[in-house]
Image (cartoon, rainbow, N blue to C red; front, top):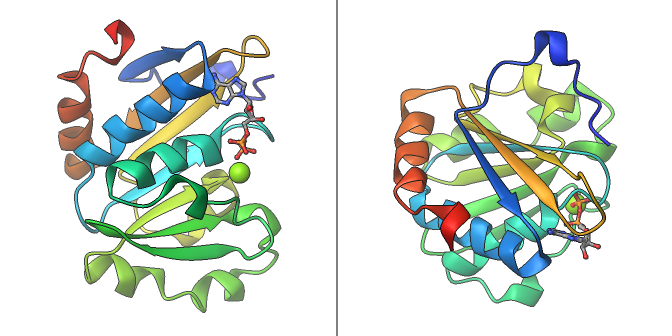
Length: 170
Ligand SMILES: Nc1ncnc2c1ncn2[C@@H]1O[C@H](COP(=O)(O)OP(=O)(O)O)[C@@H](O)[C@H]1O
Ligand SMILES: [Mg+2]
């Protein structure tokens, strides 16, 4: 299912395996608990990989009721007022750079709003540095691999916090 060009793929700093949707939500919660305000987290992976499920877990750990986080594919973005406010953005239907400009993402980040962006690769050139990138692969129908890449000091700190949670053992 992966479309990654392995020749150009950097090595992930952390790989976490999920064998169920509920485990994916747990992984999301751990990410949310490690997330700092004003962070940019990018998710990549094909349709149905689990980007939205993971975001539901992140939201849950920040105090958002599970059912409130829905796929923002058609709305492009949905703001949430959690312990850390965050914007859930789906880049899939963004067609022009102006659409990204109009969102005022830089200002949000500066104001301590975190961004969680599905399909981040599609708009990466228009964004500030993505702190933490998560590539989701689906080796089987029910299993997922989460490959974590930290691109900034903030991303590395979040990843360090995540690593202490021993996600593969839970
Ligand atoms: N281990 C798993 N983790 C997450 N989702 C899973 C898993 N196994 C099966 N699924 C299914 O994969 C789909 C993921 O959907 P979703 O999170 O909306 O994907 P995306 O946002 O990447 O398009 C759901 O239908 C879910 O039931
Ligand atoms: Mg989605």
